[in-house]
Amino acid sequence: MKIGVIDYGMGNLFSVEQALKRLGVDVVVTADEAQLEAADALLLPGVGAFPDAMKRLAETKLDAFILAQKEANKPLLGICLGMQLLFEASEEVAPTKGLGIFTGNIERFSGVSRIPHMGWNDLQLHQTPAWLQDELPAERHVYFVHSFYAANMDDAQLVAFADYEGVQVPGIVMNGSFTGMQFHPEKSGQLGVFLLEQWLKGVAATC
Amino acid sequence: MLTKRIIPCLDVKEGRVVKGIQFVELRDAGDPVELAKFYDEQGADELVFLDISASHEGRETMVDVVRQTAASLAIPFTVGGGIRTLDDMKRILRAGADKVSVNTSALERPELIKEGSDYFGAQCIVVAIDARYSEEDGTWMVYTHGGRNKTSWKAVDWAQEAVRLGAGEILLTSMNQDGEKSGFDVNLTKAVRDAVTVPVIASGGAGNAEHFRAVLQDVDTDAALAASIFHYKETSVAEVKSYLREKGVCVR
Image: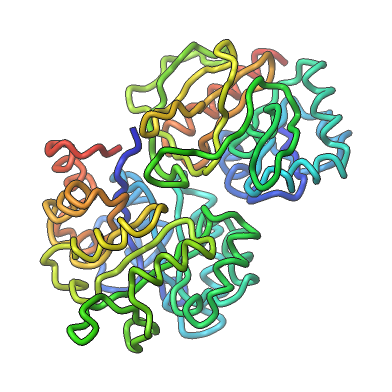
């Protein structure tokens, strides 16, 4: 199996690439559409600010490419900022439109004692994603680090969330072949490995 | 619910872990990657590598250590020591570290915090503060160069300034308590914790599991760091966590 990591110049791709390699898949990190097209599934990573990321995607025309992949039902996993970009809009730095695949908008935390939401929080399953084949382990902590979160989202697209001082933080979201994870599965120990593995199994089942 | 984090700290010199390590079961007790894995298996929530290399070559070696650690470990880790420029940050973060920690260099040139934060995001920039109580000033003052030089900054003021400049986390070491094993400085930690809105890691003075409980539960700080009690196996991360769980502290 081959995973295409979309390289649009934002953030640290090394850890996620390594995590996938440890799971025995081929990984290609590229901005080249032909190579991404040839992969069985795509990964949209991202660390940094939302407007910079959208600008980069527009400049490289990868925004249109990603939307076309949704139409084609290609599996894609967005991680952290890579998940947020799939929503309608964000208020980070300046109001910016996103890719609009998920309903909802990205807002800064308010009414919490600490920002960023940094550390290990437990996932509560809202519904079972199609790619989850095996039972979720009892230990459900994953590693979050973010100051903005997906608000006003469509309940039908919510898979799992974490509670941060009363704020429901979407942790896993899903719409058709597209999945988003707000936390970092590549930094979330055993459970992170399990979730990546399950997602890959789901990909293997569809291709 | 967000859990409290337990963070072992490893001193690395020229690519090797130093400071009396007692891990007989490890093939090579000086290998940072092996020790990192060991702590990961025990349930450490994060790790801090403090690079104490004196030479340029030693710091280059640290980049290799970071790359190997990132390739084999699935928990976040921070690298501090010798980071003076945005380029230094880039080298370490691109090699796979999740955060960099700055101390003296940020006091010498506070804009470094802003440069790093603007470029990588606040969550990647940890500002480490070494503080000692001063009778004369009636508060905790900030020291540089590993505690050798006193600055004119009050710890609380500097923490606030660091956050204003874009620090995403504060790593706060009590120089009074460091190495004493008589507990974290709860008053210092509380003062800084209450003054900023980013997570605060308490450091210096851990001697037993109860010390962790006090700083995490009574002060409600976000994380606690220790080095020697874990290295010398006076206790383990797993033991500390099981004690904390028993006392009602939310841990992973």
